[in-house]
Length: 506
Image (cartoon, rainbow, N blue to C red; front, side, top):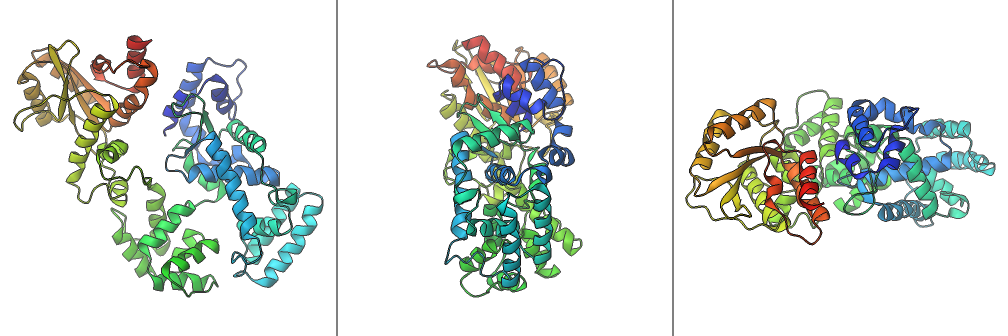
């Protein structure tokens, strides 16, 4: 979710927490003004250097550092970087419990590490835990891990073996402690709390903020995405090479090899660095529109960057029907081939437009509950429905594009033909696009004037249309959708849609 969308679901208290993370106000602005400030300040708010400075893990006590890290990881591992608050509590506790189990007898987690390094580190850690790990001791332990070739997760496992992870007695954080951690991350401007979200109270990381948080906690890829990369791109021989370079046993099936790579806490960059430059080049060629040329380091960066940008569909979203096209409507509009191909939404570029049209029809019929009109022949808009009066109709057309829609002249003539040759007057003609330019808005006004029917011509982003589909019922209650909500000319954005909903239903 974009930051500008996230703030729409937040009331004053939670907006002020984010605002207060980076500026001091002598007088708190009202709710709408606070939203405007946050949207305006987005570039500074999400700048990785500023994110790291606000999070300030180096000067955070070790207990909170563990909690902050697991909270952030749990959110970043989600496709939309958001979780209902109760689910987030469960995820953090599950992460902590997993560490405790990895530290138990019989676990493979530490058996591949150098025994002398583990012994030395454990001795130092045990001494530090006696009086509680201070900030200075935390920094020294981090340096020692680097010297001994151990990871932060190794530290957690050893701490659990000493019966002190994440706190004394190996007790996981309580709900109240995690809730306090969520509040503190809000105050640091690192987690947003969408208390008015239609799906319930959501904790989330806006997509613009995610890169800075990943950099701050040293997360190259979420574990599930790293596992997918290993499964899709590497063969058993390459996994053998990676495991051997990491000093980890190499035998077993591919699934066992991958599990061992993950258990050894190898970073994606470390794993890929064990391969030859030629092998990395082959992986780049397998990935859609990934640059192949460059140094070994650049190829590794390109591969990780590709997977970092991916959003993996859930099993429910991946079902083979129109609902799947609706779920990825914004990807289809912007022709986001990487995500569309990796999730098998399409197999060829030419399928994008048809999927975009089907997803929009699903939105209109299943989400808005509006019946489509039949249109004869092949030269017609992608869809339409009747105005409540029965005397006129609404039409729409889908236009996917990499970049903002600029309303080319041939499509201007095409839409003019649809309007003027419709069986009934067209009240409004909507063009569903990824985004639009000022030139496109000017042409929309020209088309309204030249249509001969005074038809409103609206340009609407696919993401905003989907927002309408998922939120209109919260305003309407038990009433049906009124198509006049879409009777708008020019840029039809979320603000205008919300104003329409309030006008018709509130």
